Length: 255
Image 1 (cartoon, helix red, strand yellow):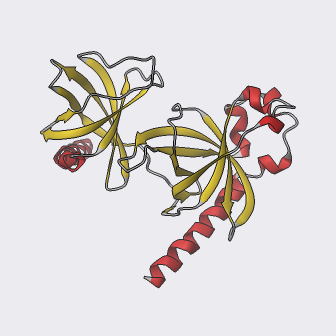
Image 2: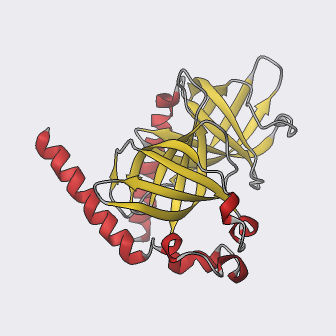
Image 3: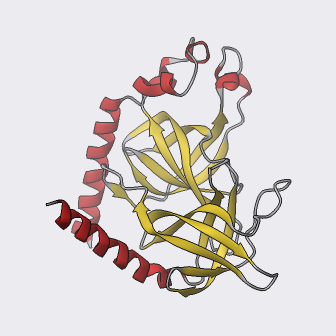
């Protein structure tokens, strides 16, 4: 049985390597290994087996460029699914820049809950222990953005600015036909630069049910929060999942 599992894993790995040409002209994200929170963005110019020819990776100000032979984690999207792989960045000269992709490519955003393409206006605010402390919430400045897809476990946001990976958001999920306002805490798990006419960053945000907030914030920071901000419980996730299922069914029926 172990041999069979290994064989299937090997077949899946080969298939993933064969699908890398689908990344041609696509944006990918590159992060140093071990991950330090700094995400670089690059475009794939060519693919040859496990090697990606890329543009000069664009990073955040003050962090400089990637160095030759630097180990990296590569994040990319194929057919709407996010994948991660380890690799090595090569910059032998100014003209030739490559990523050598490790054969072990893993699907990193497999959601147990259903995902529905849902473009709605929503608002968010970056959050931290300090901003959650009693007396700070009145100073929060909400920012508008759009969702690209939705599930009860998280959503995909299109943001005009690049936010740090693993940073936290407080969101107002303005789903009028479900329930509103519905506040939820979330954490950015990954980010890529969109390839559109405007500079936007697609951020995968994982929801944090109220029961798990103490795993992310201090007890002092959560003390005194309005019950309205703590309404996104596990029970509410189940209700949201059922609602999204109904949307998905109606959409298929209409098609």
